[in-house]
Amino acid sequence: MGSFEFTPSNFPFENRNALLDDYTPDELVGRDEEIREYHAALQPAIDGSQPDNIFLFGKTGVGKTAATRFLLDKLVSGSSEYGVNIHTGRMNCDGLDTSYRIAVETVNAFRDADQKISETGYPRSTVYDMMWDTLDDLGGLIILVLDEIDHLQDDSLLYQLSRARENKELTSARVSVVGISNDLSYRDRLSPKVRSSLCERSINFPAYTAGELQQVLSQRESIAFQNGVLDDGVIPLCSAYGAQESGDARKALDLLLKAGDIAQESNASTVTVEHVERGRELLQREEVTRGILGLNDHERILLYALSTFTAREETPVRSRKLYQRYENLATNSGSDALTSRWMHDHLDELEMLGLVSVTKRNEGSSGGQYKTITLDQELEPVLDALEETIHESGVHTSVESWL
Ligand SMILES: Nc1ncnc2c1ncn2[C@@H]1O[C@H](COP(=O)(O)OP(=O)(O)OP(=O)(O)O)[C@@H](O)[C@H]1O
Image (tube, rainbow, N blue to C red; front, side, top):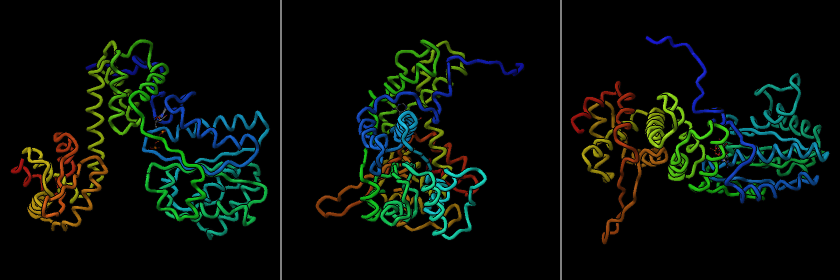
């Protein structure tokens, strides 16, 4: 047995942390147009006036948060240089999903440690009053960034903020809101008044192209890796996969990190395209397992039913046939099958998780519509993950006859 002592072994990395999600590079590449637009929208702040509210939208991993961090850091350092009073507060609405909680967080973000308030126990109007007082005490311009704003269950705070000056709640401070969302339908769900206020300036962050991802990854290469350790094809391949997977820079960076880790574990002398391919396989497996772990028993049985068709190369399968098999497996495992209506709703969820793909088809001259379904992942990792999670339900024994 080896000694298992820990000794530094950085190869192939120079600074592995530069590939982690919380790292913001000094310059952002591949987002010139969006950053120019965002910069212009924030420019009034440095001139001493209030910028419009800004709404940033685009799919996950396209640089919305990174661009915000980057520009607000520059704005705050500019404000001290030019003597303008600017404060910024950033909150993620994923953990703070009501106006009440955001208001408490806003109070606490700007108060000294001994003045912070508890998260519960006040009427909402009291919390709002404390928030107005806190903001007015700061004075000047306050930029509130609400990341994942679509998690906010009510729009009371957004509404109140849009009227705060008009209602004389704020007299010395002005607040601009930056809302960030990857839910493209969020804007349409807002009341017209809140929508027109929040979305005074909307900036779309499109998916990265493979070329833009190459710029992002090459910039990180120089910080994260030792000189010359990446084989030529590594960055183009990670970028191509990232572009294929919804143009997500996070995924492309994760893949580059995984390839580096695999090269390190196998004591290779360079990072190769084979390490990238192996890394991709492992990441896909992890993603499939994570998605399946979050499903309930019936969703897993449904996925199992679809896997049996996939194993026999009988996909795309019509929803009626899939439902029959799901019903069979559920009954055999001793649980009552849910309705076909349930199945249709949950197929949409499985599709959003990237596990299945659903296609609507027309019946032809009779004019009816039906759906066909295929598994959107490799069969083997899906079955592995299902088997890990489905033992107790009794489906496992009944499914084998179908495979
Ligand atoms: N143009 C870029 N240059 C360098 N790194 C980038 C760039 N765009 C994104 N990244 C990096 O990719 C990762 C994801 O980016 P970011 O968090 O900004 O995405 P997002 O659009 O806010 O996604 P989400 O909606 O999931 O929060 C981060 O690690 C970020 O540093």
